[in-house]
Length: 389
Ligand code: DI6
Ligand code: FE
Image (cartoon, rainbow, N blue to C red; front, side, top):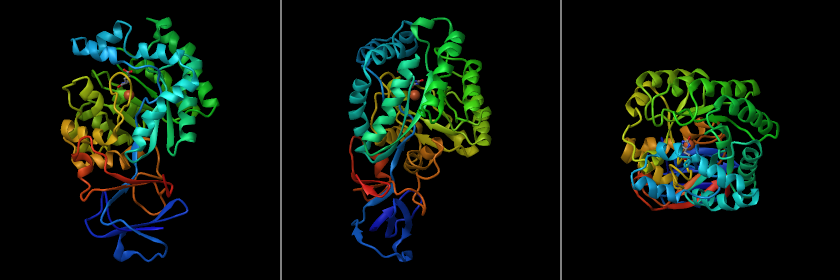
């Protein structure tokens, strides 16, 4: 099949272009003048075609919600104060432990569908609200099952080092050796883990503690990534780079030196403006340093019940522009090409022959409209491996 009379983005000019699809792959993407393939044609009337969107950082599977905490923050409590008082992540842990696998699945479904309705075909989903063996496995099974039930590719991340559960209060090392690492091994043995993540923060784990988890990931042959430098500068980004991490995420407090290390290790900076917005943060990620050092910047929702109850990747792209000063083109690459790199995927995220035909067709004239509009969904069609769905 050939989609003709389209405009392609990012990285293509405004000329009349086409995308040819066969066997679930892109066969051709470029100016119509260069098309030599035959096949049924579908005129797009000038619509914009991009790679389908990729949300490379979400905590989409969880129990309950944190609307109460939202109200508390509005009355002046900080995220860290709430966490220290036993709220925050730990309150979601309670709700996630008590939910059945079926309930977690049912609750995650509408959130995932909302992402897909905006042209997303690949979603990363983390564990980290179980913090015990059974619940971490339960979350990852739900994540994998979502990918089997809905037309989407799900990539998982094991986030056992997300917070300390109440039963291990003040015993981080015991938690890591007794629960976090054994659960990682068990989840990996079940084929549930695509990458290993951690939360390196004053309210979570130190770089030294994260290193223990990363060593285990390395022993299992799993790639790593890290929530780093979100609320303070602890050295998580440098640690991630030292382990050749796929990505360092948030990175508001990262420095120019961190950016240099990330460039050298090929680590993507995943920007999460939804959390920045929801927490009313003021420390901006070092976007100029990332540009200067050539660090690819991805953009993701961080969909989670506490700091980013956000299930719109288009709105996230807008926030990345308005809050972090990305260009609309950078935001689009951040939700496609660089998001794929952040997940270690080389078969999607770009319009290039041989890659998966994961495409989004948009009812817009200019690709910049995708990041420009707020609360508007111009998706016309979504293709997953060449199938319209
Ligand atoms: N950083 C985040 O933004 C989320 N986790 C993390 O490590 C927040 C998770 C939550 O508050 O529930
Ligand atoms: Fe997160």
